[in-house]
Image (cartoon, rainbow, N blue to C red):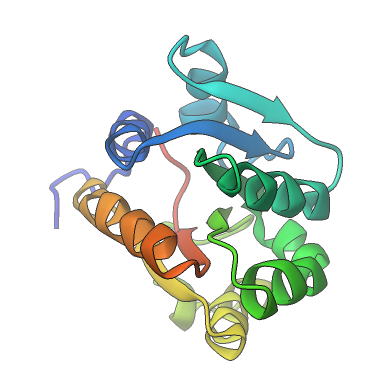
Length: 170
C-alpha cells in the first residue's frame, strides 16, 4: 500500500481518459466533488453533463454508446440505490455498457467497503454482485490501473461495470 494511502483524483481522471471516455455524467456528490468532479468540470478535454437524478445518467450513458461514445456515470452509493431499477433494466437486461463510478458517502478511509460496519456502505458490493455487474474497488491510487481494461471489457461485451470509490479522492 502507498505510504500515504491516498486515492488521487488526477490518477482516476488519467485512467478514465486512457479508457477512451470523454463524457462524464454526474449528480453532485460530496464524496468525489473536490478531488474528482471539480477537476473534471475544469478539464477542457472532457464533457461534463450534470443531471438531477441518477436514472437520467444511466439513460444518457447508454444512449451515448449507440453513437460509439464512451461515458462514465459518477454517483454516490445513495444514488446507486435510487438508480438500481434503471441499471437493472437498461444496463443489465438490455445489455448496455454503462460505466459507473460510485462514491461511498461516509466510508471509513482505512476500512474496505465490504468490511464496513455501515450497512449503506457494505451493501453496495453485494447489490452489484446480485445485478451481475463487474466491480472494482478504488481504495488507493494503484487501483486506478484497472479502469481502462475494465471499461474496454464493458464496451466489448456490452455489459455494465462499476468502480467503487472507498475513500474520497484528493
